[in-house]
Image (cartoon, rainbow, N blue to C red):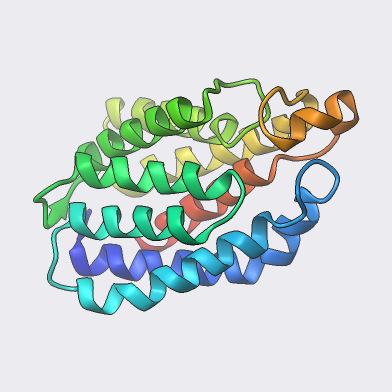
Length: 207
């Protein structure tokens, strides 16, 4: 599915996508958060981009742990610790690997979801990024179990992620800044679920 150089390329492209969508992600954050999700995440990935050239010869675990630590230290708000934890746990799941297949990717996504659940003390149906992550992972596991190839697995994940992000409009947030607005948050799509969906799109396009 991918080697270390490919993963670095994917991370660069994720940074470009977040930069491209930062205004939209920030607009989504305005009614329910701190109006900074896109700006903060873009800044974090700019710092990630500076570190990637020296990681070319490293294993995937080292690459992803470095990404996670960089996001934790440079991205403000809740998204830094959440995405940072997700990438660090993915790195731990892929420690020592220089190539990964579909099963490795799904195992690392399992670790990422658990990291976000624990760090955010949250679950699905609470209008968070988990509402995109969890359905995406379930759809990818189902597609893989049915014998689909890597591209079809990622396609299934992307469709489920975007459906999950859309579904957050119907949910009342109980975690983070969005919980302060209560039912006034109805009709607003969660920015974290949306940024995750953009990231998974990039993975699909690159692989």
